[in-house]
Length: 149
Image 1 (spheres, rainbow, N blue to C red):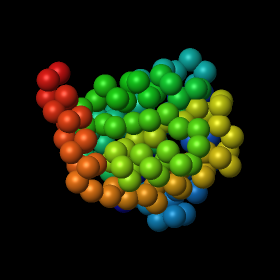
Image 2: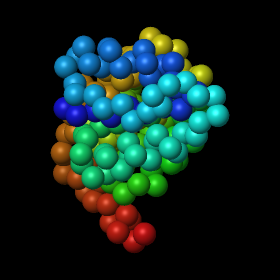
Image 3: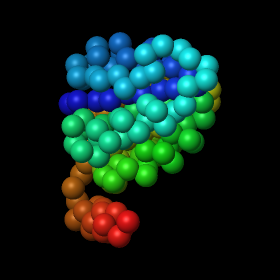
Image 4: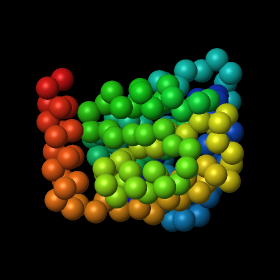
């Protein structure tokens, strides 16, 4: 599975810790930046390219980190085809994929500790969309809304 990761200064340290762990699980990982810590950088500069890659299906899932995760989350959700959530626990990380075909998770690098972040990422990456009729029906309604915009 192709995975993308991105972070601004608020999530940069956590991103750098997560990258080797993700690669160790055998995922193909693309880093959308930041390439170095820069205290004045802006999360949209990294979150948007990742979200566009997910929306275009160039990568299957994405992980975006900023200080709180909030700004990154509302930014990526503006991109057609993205279904992202701000996560602070593992249940929603897998349930969001299984029921809602969530394809990006957002984590606050200043909010979630390293170990919990890794557990969230693992839950997200190891989950599979169920494709059940009720979930397909709901997802179709979301996709219809995207067409209106």
